[in-house]
Length: 137
Image 1 (cartoon, rainbow, N blue to C red):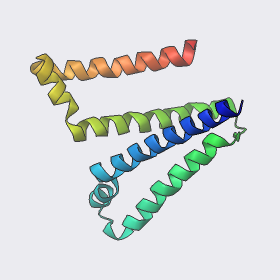
Image 2 (image 1 turned 180 degrees about the vertical axis):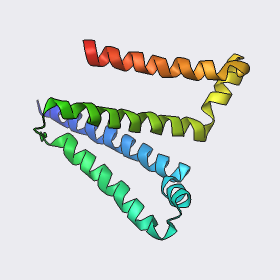
Image 3 (image 1 turned 135 degrees about the vertical axis):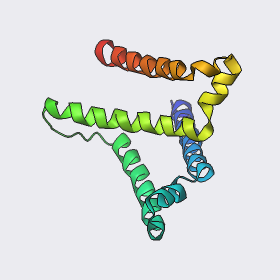
């Protein structure tokens, strides 16, 4: 019993370290905060951006470990879900744009002239997968 508890704690700690390291690498390698200040022309607010990123991560951790919930009517779930989906989709699109994934993928599989069709296939695949998960699982 004690060995199982120690193993679970070790696995949880290792997973947390891995995810935290990935987040830090993502933020530093891609330079998210400096790029954001450059695009918005708010160089004087870089500390505020960094603080917002840290507080957002801490709020996410707190929300994951506590059983809190908002008691909102179901109608509010639609705009919240759409906003969350748009955020994740735009983040994924920004990452692929920064890392030039689509041009490399199109070049490797030999469909450079059909890159728009490739992108639309990915978009519709994500939509179909999300709908299947939301409606049936």
